[in-house]
Length: 467
Ligand SMILES: Cc1cc2nc3c(=O)[nH]c(=O)nc-3n(C[C@H](O)[C@H](O)[C@H](O)COP(=O)(O)O)c2cc1C
Image (cartoon, rainbow, N blue to C red; front, side):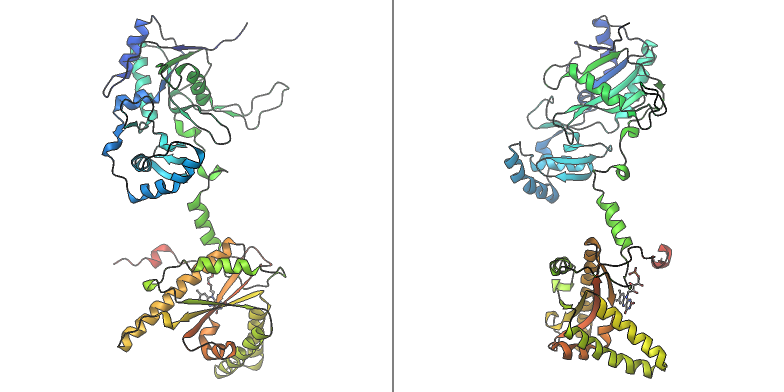
């Protein structure tokens, strides 16, 4: 026998206002249209009427945009013009911000993760089908809850086991055209898991999970329409599903960790910060492009510094005679220091050899200096000392940015304090003026080893002092 799924659109639903009882309206319309609900019917309700009944309407005239809203407005203005699409006002952008957990993209369109967890354009805010030029409709705060309340009351009134889906239409990545989606569900699970079932040829399905509520929402959309059709309630009859008391839309929302297309800045940035290691091993022979080094130094220039003095100066030391001369001279001093420390010949030889390998074998050696001309001058010694500390703190911030930039570029690096102990030697060999104070070396290159064990970190409770 031919199989059928039927869709019915209730035609006598009035315009909905704040405080209207949607359940009563559905029951009245069914009665008026001589339509009797049956077990297994699925009632699909357009989100707009839930929004209206809950009074989730805002007037853009009453919104004061924040600086962030203006910033986004100024960014998207030329893009919207280029794409020939209507430009969102700063007031509308402000409401989008308020209705969103996260802005994922603000280009010619604004894609956000709404407070409810949906990823869609403009936080699901609608101007269409809302009365008033400056009025907008917001998504209900909890569509599952609204669906559950409606489902329960209709079941109580009719005695029929029905399901409810609250629907909207969303645009899609990869394909043009909006389609119906479910925002809330009651009595029917969002997903139909087909894994473990057999296909036409008896093969076991490994990964087929059907987004059944979205399929139903989309089919209802055919009858509901988007414009002035005015059919916000559709009943689907004949679709076989298992009744699910604890259905919940969250199961259809892909988690950020498994979303290949959503950039999770927070996660990837934290991962980057924690995976950076000081690289003290052998570098590969791969040449490091000077442009990449300059790019990293440019990023390091965005570090914070007291009075925005930017007192850092970077000297890139390629392999060659000058670098060798510098390291040899530094080692002479190091040798005499080690002797004074009471180290024996073989210990000294070993240490010297180590620094030679570190600083001469790395593809790029960077010397980081403080330019004392950039520091403020005071009449008293004490404040000048503090100002020097501020300068060094700024240098450290820039150095940290530099290490992170190397990590981003796939380079391995290590920060060494050696120049700090031989400032005059470095100045002399490199012919640096007195105002340039050498503070650190960075060895940079492509590491031979990629996985370096992380040194243990102190526990949070050991570094947060309770007072
Ligand atoms: C100011 C400063 C000076 C450092 N000097 C040296 C050094 O002279 N020799 C060295 O082997 N590592 C040096 N390091 C690297 C540290 O040993 C390293 O950052 C620390 O052990 C933590 O390891 P991680 O960077 O892999 O997390 C220095 C780090 C900083 C921040």
